[in-house]
Amino acid sequence: MAMRRLWWLFVVLVVAGCGGAAKEAPPTPAASAPALFCGKDSVTISSPPAGAPRRFAGLKLLNKPDKVRVRGLAWDGAQIGVVCGVTSAEHFATLVRTAHLDMHNGRPALRWTSKSLHYLMWLDRPGTAVFVGAPAKELPQLVENIKVVNPSTTG
Image 1 (cartoon, rainbow, N blue to C red):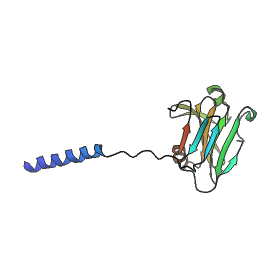
Image 2 (image 1 turned 45 degrees about the vertical axis):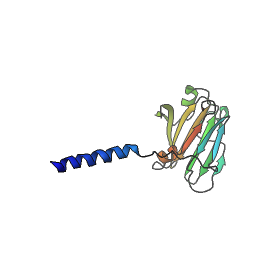
Image 3 (image 1 turned 120 degrees about the vertical axis):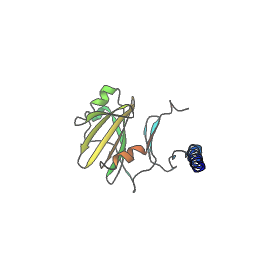
Image 4 (image 1 turned 90 degrees about the vertical axis):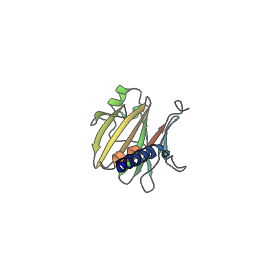
């Protein structure tokens, strides 16, 4: 009987110790983390792919590319960018003809495939859409490394 009490005491102490541990702060972007801008909104890549990025200013699959501005960074096998000037959710839904509608963190999103890259683009707020292109296995991790800062909503 005494052994059972000691066992439960041990379990209670272990479980209580798990909750009391200090939580790690989320990683903050390094000072040299690449960033893209749409007006005052910035998109920072906290853990960019290896290698030096190349800048680009267009996305071939965009429908009516003259109505928006694209700013992006490309690495071997990955692209991250912003589309500035997306006026509404309806406008966003028609940006890429070959895409299908989806959701990303409660926001409207588009998904499509081009060559060997899978793309995810979400409407972060009116005026700013963020897109990521990468091989299917790398896409979720790359999306997690993106931080969008909206100065008008930060305190």
